[in-house]
Length: 430
Ligand SMILES: NC(=O)c1ccc[n+]([C@@H]2O[C@H](COP(=O)([O-])OP(=O)(O)OC[C@H]3O[C@@H](n4cnc5c(N)ncnc54)[C@H](OP(=O)(O)O)[C@@H]3O)[C@@H](O)[C@H]2O)c1
Figure 1 (cartoon, protein in one colour):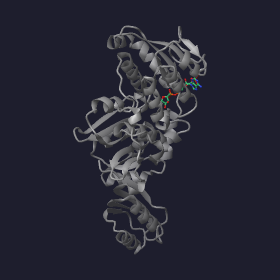
Figure 2 (cartoon, rainbow, N blue to C red):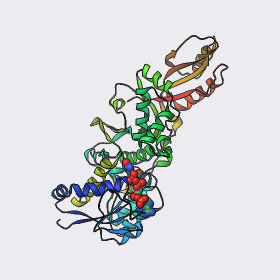
Figure 3 (tube, protein in one colour):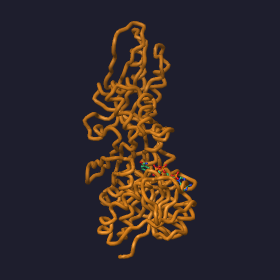
Figure 4 (cartoon, rainbow, N blue to C red):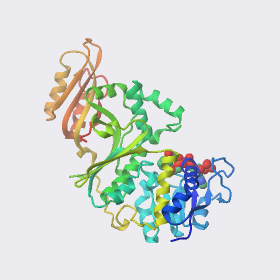
């Protein structure tokens, strides 16, 4: 295999420009590893004149990325525009229809259309590769599809969004509230001007849906992911969690349960001494569990020019080497239907914080509700005795079904003297 692998890149932003830089800087290494040259021949972006910190000399520039995908002189189209629909999807479909391999970093696209695009690619005999779409520079897709090929993964979970992890880390380390850290993160460029996709958990949910499909051999089922973000996490909860021996992390968790495939993204209390609790700042981590490996954790940078370009180029190298693996580890036509587990059947332990008027008898009412619902308390924290003042009361309850926990919380919210809606955070058994 000696002929040059020709690449067309759609999108020249953070990841696109980073990919061009890496391909230029490491061309000799890549040639040695692939046994052939890898050469960018065409690019597309909205603004041809923008300085991207990398030379576009000698490259064919297309204003229309879809036209490039079907007409450019290339073997591989690299889609780095973004978005679940519209232009990015058109580019990928046009490339597949024209018999070009596709590399993308687009988690939104794969979360929403992954199974269909995988079928199209496999029918056309081309590769659809997406290492950069999940956890940036962490080679989790390769680890799952190749390194763990002999394992039935039973649970996969991770810190899948660097912005949320950064905010939660700074809240804990500096005693700041969510909104203060968010503003700071925006001014430092760690959070987008519109941060909702990150802080509402949607970005992590996109990645989780892809991981779940890969882990469990099922069609990608983003619509069934239970999603909660971090905006309601308060400094008070971070401190109570710490006191109870936990840290609060936004996790994406997918598992095979008796009720189907559970996929959920939400803030969790994780024991402070488990490895993922120590993954801080903008770092991501993914943990896969199975019978043979027990537990495997990969940690690294989940975003940014260098880490994401590294993952994009790894996919290009696989194509250059002629490696062919089904998109989601088994042929797309054989992916099973999703079978989502309803969230109210989730079984776990819970942290519940109440804001209570400090008056005799109120906690007895709360205890009676727990007893009536056959829910047992594991621990309780209460501070200060300031008669008739509002004080926080924190309790953790033993494992029970989510539907039952919700009924308990609804009943507690009605107790005279509970002045705010109770805060509930799930405790993870990791
Ligand atoms: N940034 C990260 O750290 C990261 C990490 C993992 C995955 N990703 C994923 O990688 C993809 C790209 O992200 P990014 O951060 O590089 O985005 P970005 O910086 O916003 O760049 C997007 C690029 O797409 C181009 N573009 C937009 N509309 C276009 C159109 N109609 N035709 C042709 N080009 C068009 C833009 O052109 P102009 O420059 O001319 O405006 C820009 O170059 C997304 O799917 C994202 O989710 C990003």
